[in-house]
Image 1 (cartoon, rainbow, N blue to C red):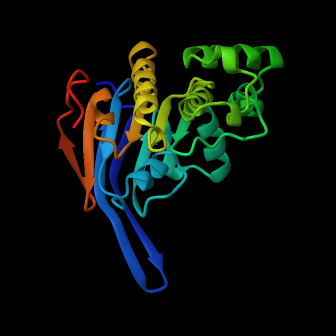
Image 2 (cartoon, rainbow, N blue to C red):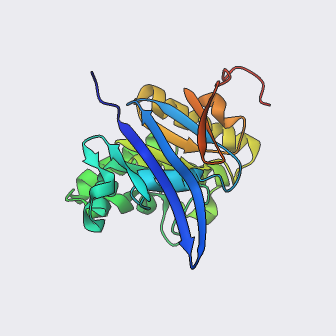
Length: 236
């Protein structure tokens, strides 16, 4: 039987500050298959972003373990995690996180500077990524010269330039107008469909889940399944 790409097993997370204990979630188990597009919803403070950070090894669970592919994330050192993330994880954030003094090309190239690729190889990867997101004509533009939707597409190009195993998107449409949000969601869906990219997306946007193949809700520390409406339906 084929092993899932992501395995989250009996994961709990508790934050402690002095004598105060905040239990975010307890005994969560979840598998994500390769090529799946999972949407994770839930109210603010439900722990969605914390769970995403645990998958990426940016945060440690209090109990349980996480495996992504062949990597047992929860048992890796910080140095191992940094190298692993650069190769296997593509991040897309709500706030784009582009460096304003760098062009679109230079922002997308950043993850490749940590690899052993030559400048010619890096150029090929960057040009391919920007072409995939429809921004071949914006390579020399700075973030201030781009719309919000274009900035997020640059961020997506940066996320896929290393051909990562897994894309983690945290509220990718949170700072976008309706039209730009739809363009970004269509792009993520296309990456999932055409390139078989595995995507886990945290979102508050009820329209966003229509582009996913599966939806889960995280409420009061419990994962609940939910039906994903067709992308052809009107948004709620």
